[in-house]
Image 1: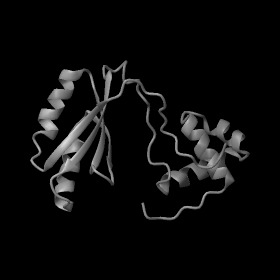
Image 2: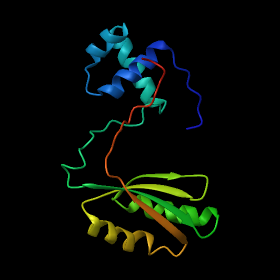
Image 3: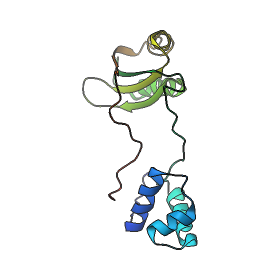
Image 4: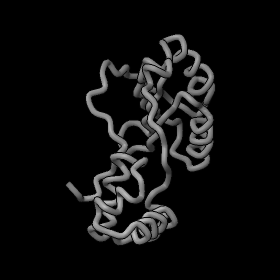
Amino acid sequence: MGVLFFFDRIDRKILKLLQDNNRISNVELAEEVGLSPPACLKRVRHLRESQVIVGDVSLVNPELSGSRMTMLVSVEMERDRKDIYARFQTSINKAPEVIECYQTTGSYDFLLIVCVKDIQAYETFLERVLRADSNIRKFQSSVSIRRTKYSTAIDVGVS
């Protein structure tokens, strides 16, 4: 991104409300933040054009979609090289089971959040993606037994 964006109180409230419900009508949103509908629409467009708002999605219940297991996978690469990291990231971006990937500090280089139907699907993912990459030194898998908190909302400083 690289561009500084300064939020005022109204921008923050718009962002909070849209994160809670991005299907809110512009008229309702304008009323909630104390603007006219055209002024509110202008603000939302500016937030999108400035890449503050980067997308609008529908969140799907993973259990109802067939993905009943969530795995947290820590990956250590063989070497600390930019080209190796780039190839790994390309591979991970192609793997539909990986719903999140973080490059990290510490003992491991990456943390993956992997959603699969069952342990056999996870084993298939391991063979196809992780074990096939000769630049991976090791990986460690943890099975999530329960999700106790989940949110896609970013704190924008409005309560």
